[in-house]
Structures are given as C-alpha cells and as structure tokens.
Length: 114
Image (cartoon, rainbow, N blue to C red; front, top):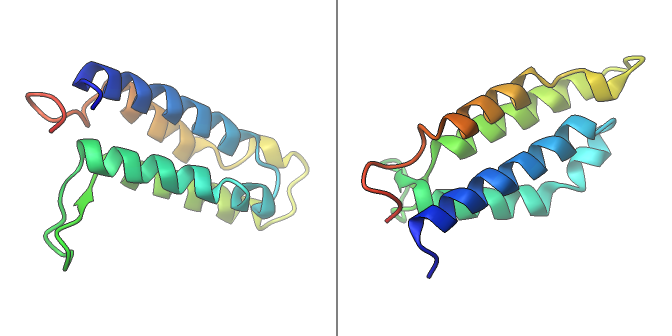
C-alpha cells in the first residue's frame, strides 16, 4: 500500500491531468471519452480520502474532491451543449474551483489517509 504522502501526490497529479483534459474538451463527446478515467480517479480519491457516506446503503466512502470534480464536469457539459465559437475556452470556472480546492489540500483528512 502507498503511504499517505504518495497518495496525496498521486491525487494532486492525476487531478491536474484530468482537469487539463476537461478544460481542453470542445464537445460533450470529448467529455464522454474521459468517463472511465474520471470515474477511476473519483473511486481512488473516495477510497483514500473520503468519509463514509451516511446515505449509502453499503457504507461507501465519498470525498469532497469527487463533489468538486462532478460539479466541474456538469458545468463544462452545460456550456458545451451550446454552440459557442470557442468551446475550449468556456465552462472552465468549475474546473478552476476544483483545481483550487485540490491544491489547497483541504480535502486531506487530519492524520493522513486511512
């Protein structure tokens, strides 16, 4: 198992990589091609940095990083559904919010990853 510093570094590096890909997306289908990668990332951060979801029947974990990323994707998708002239430049405020939260490391549990 990776130590908590390696897990944090991995979460930050992979988060930046995914954010860059989302920012570069110019169509909803571009975002769709990222689904597996995004889901894998969210599974990773949920498992390593999440808390038990009180609404989950299976006691699954959920992290704030997943929330911010989900909001970023939904915002980007809403903007891409319209035919803007420069689609790669729009709808990235949510991605920037995700990156700010990611870089703040406020999502790290006190005492490190479990």
